[in-house]
Length: 485
Figure 1 (cartoon, rainbow, N blue to C red):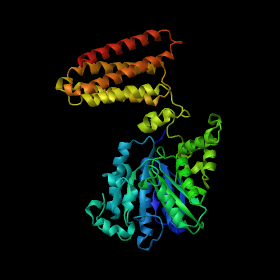
Figure 2 (figure 1 turned 60 degrees about the vertical axis):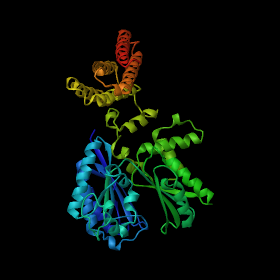
Figure 3 (figure 1 turned 180 degrees about the vertical axis):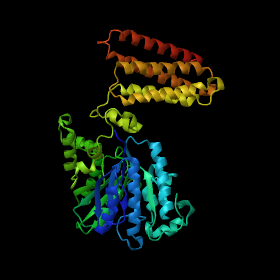
C-alpha cells in the first residue's frame, strides 16, 4: 500500500474567504495530495485545513500554503479569541501509513529549517520533534501569544529552533512538529455565561488537575450565541472521547448547564469513534458484538452529539484506506500494536504475541551484548539481524505453520547465542542474564504452545514441539548454571 502522511496546519484567518481560498488553491493543485476538510471560525478568526497523501507531496503542499498565508495574513491586524503566535500558528505532521517515524522526524526538521530560512520566520519544534521537554507542549510555546513574542524572543530560553531570533512583526512565529492523532473537540453549552465555561475548562484540563492529556479553554461565540468549551485531547488512548465528553457534561450539570452539541475540528481516526460507540452501546446494555463498525461509529456520533460530522471526509481510513492493510502490522508503533492486540474487534492472529515475545528477547539481548570483548563482537550483529528477521513476521499476521517453524529457529538461535556469550558477561550483569534467560525461555514455551493448534493436521508437529521444548530447557539450564541460580 502507498505511504500516506497527514498534515493539519492552522491559519490565523477565518473571516476573509478570498484568503482562505488562496491558501487552499496550492494544496488542491499538488499532485499526490488529497484535501480532507476545511474548518473555519469567525470568532476564533482561524482556519484548520487537513490534507494528506504521498509524503513529499504533502511537504510541497504545506510549503506552498505557508507561502500564500504569509503573503496575505498580517498579524498586526489579527484579532481572535484562539491562542496563536503567527499567521501559520502551527503545522503538525502525522504519520498514517508506511511512514517511518525516524525518517519523518528528520524530514520535519529539514522542512522547519527551510521555512525559517526562506521566510525569515522564527520556528519552534514541538510535540515529538521538540528538542526540550518544555517545547513538547504547544500551550507552552503559545504562552503570551503573538503580542508577547518580542519579550519571548529576548529570553535565550525561548530562542527559536530555526529562523531569526528577531521578531517578524507581520507573520509572527510558527510551531512545526510530528505528532500522533489528537482530537480538537469543541462542546457548546446551553449558557451564555463565560464564567461557567471557564470553570468547566479549568476542571477538565490536565494542568489544573483534570483529565490527563487534555488542554482546555472556553469562549463565548457570538455566531452561536452560547459559550463553548474547547478541548485538545493529545492522547486519545489515555483520555478517549467519551471520557472527555462525560467529564464536561458532569461539570456543566453541577453548574446548572448542559452540553447542547459538539464538533470535531479537523480529522479523527476511526478507531476513536469505534471506542466511543462501543462504550455508549455497552452503557445502554446492548450487545456490542452485534454492532458493525458503521453502527458503532453512528452510535458514537449520536451519543457525543457531534454536529455535521462526516466520517467520509474526516476519518483518514475512509479517505486513504486502512492505516494497516492486514499484512502491515510492522508499520505500527509498539503502543498501537499492543492496543490492537487488546481489542478483539481487530483482526490480529494470536501468534503475533509470540513474535513480540521473540523480538523482545532478541532486542534486549542485542543491547546486553553491545561492547563485549572482541572475540564475541559478532554476537551483537547477529542478534540485530535475528531481530530484523523476526520483525518481518509482523507483515504476515496469518502466521502459518512454516512461519512458526522459522520463527522457532530464530528464537533458538538467539537462545544458543546467549548461552555462548554468557560466560563473558561480567558479575554485575548477572541480573540481566537471568532476565534474558527467562525472556527466551518464555518465548520458546509460547512457540511450542502455538504449534499445538497445528498438530491435528500435521502429526509430525508433536515431535517438533518436543524438540523445541527440549532445546529451550537445555539452553536455560546451561545459562542459569553459570549464574548459579
